[in-house]
Image 1 (cartoon, one colour):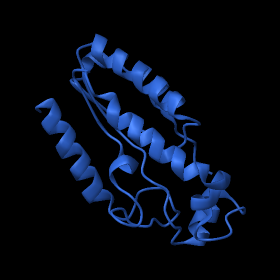
Image 2 (spheres, one colour):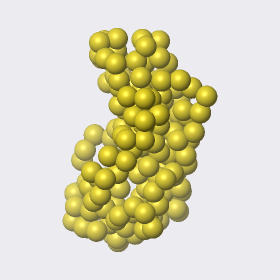
Image 3 (cartoon, one colour):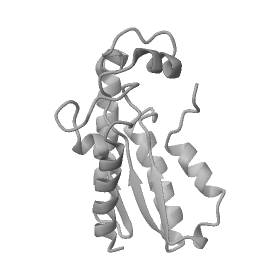
Length: 162
């Protein structure tokens, strides 16, 4: 199974660098944080670390849960409990997909009244199936990834004037 990446892991990895060597940090959050508070607490620490060094921050994440397009891929990643294409949509009695959306909304609002930071909460802006494609394993962005990343980066870079 892949390593679970959540906000604290992003923060700890970032602490391993001399932040002042950079002019921009791009932090990408998945949907693995246990709560909105967990994600935004880590984002605040990342922001404070960057801001104190005069470094601009772009924070992106997480995408929405979708229908699983490839059950074998999903089982390889999430284990044998994956039993249907709507597994993520029903996880934790529907709380799992809602948590991803709520984290994205909180991330999207994080840059309000803060300088040198731009955020893009994918699940706050893209909904499955209306504007976000189903994914092979139901969550990791593969289908449409280039377009979504280009849109997020373009918007964030415009906000930061870079």
